[in-house]
Image 1 (cartoon, one colour):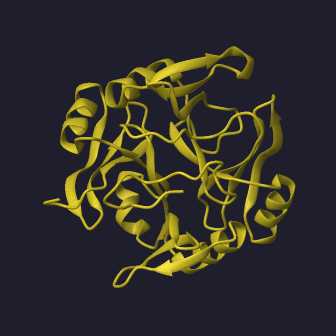
Image 2: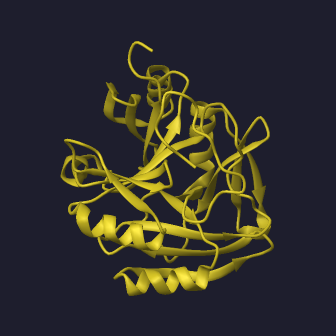
Length: 266
């Protein structure tokens, strides 16, 4: 489970249905993407030819994310992009619910060997996300260190339909953030993802849709490394209520954020 907070987020084990279980980068050139993220986060990779060259990224043996060759069904016109996958206890039922709520299913459900079953979907507002019913994969490992997912949020032009869509699909409550067009999706007392109605502020940098936030020990140094290795700074480091963050694009255009969830002065 994920929540921007001053201490390291705690991950449920196994990860609860409806919560982020995995993030995967679709890249037209994975051999160019992998070294960039190694430079940022120290990721090393286990590449599987069985699954078309998909690579699981690890930090000191801890599974952190995936990098895949861009599939032919991608709706992203060749631009590299991150996809958030939510845990599903019944993928067939959840795919049916996506359609009932006005979303679309791009691919799946399909079996990925003994790892699990997946579907790639588009919500009613056009944001791409995934569903994953786990078998042997296990999702993220719980660890402290750079490159772990600390938050995910969808940036949309109209937050009310998005809140309704994900609240029903993920069996979540939605808690509004006072003074902002922003809701936290909640299971019990724990927020695990966000819905922001400020997509117009992100369109110029290509960050509308789902945004992933990776932990960085030092946001400013991570930004410098990104620039040194061909990345682009879309939003320079700044402090906010939940810590210090920046928005980056990798050399092939995938947009993501880096964040240290420590408030200024902590």
